[in-house]
Length: 218
Image 1 (tube, one colour):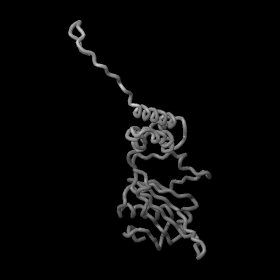
Image 2 (cartoon, helix red, strand yellow):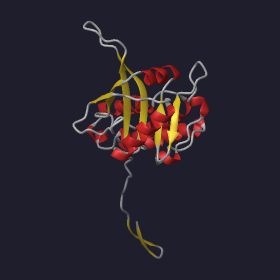
Image 3 (spheres, one colour):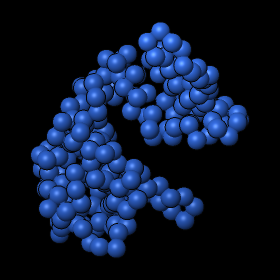
Image 4 (tube, helix red, strand yellow):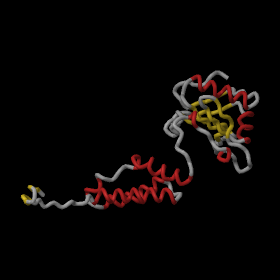
């Protein structure tokens, strides 16, 4: 509308059309955040249940639907605020695991040791005894880089043969270690600490699934 003092010069007809697709996305986001606060349903499942229904609507909706990765932080933040959990540590140095999360049913600690910059090693009392009495081991590191949490570079596992035969393979994991990098120095530190913590542990054979020998001579 244009006016000149008290004289009406021109009137433009304009109607605001609501962005239905955007409104539906905002609604789904609100419901998802609410469910993340009130339920223990995994956030990926909440996202899928609330947003996949929008894909069946008109094509305009598809371009407005956000990917889960863009909503993950929002949903996790909503859940953390409700449960009193703080933000995720940015690095391994900031990690502080509550004691109750390390205690097994028998009252034993699952944490074998925590050291330096940082190495976190997990094992049960029974597994540590088995580890200390064995001399031949299978160690794996390939394929464990992507499965590691963002604060660490890899999950390093050690396995022992508990009596395999022609009919049955009985190789079981006895130790899990979270390592901050994949340097030779870190592997040496891990083996040195294991030797100290396992009372004279002296492995004679370590088989590994890597194209490069990363293990120190023990």
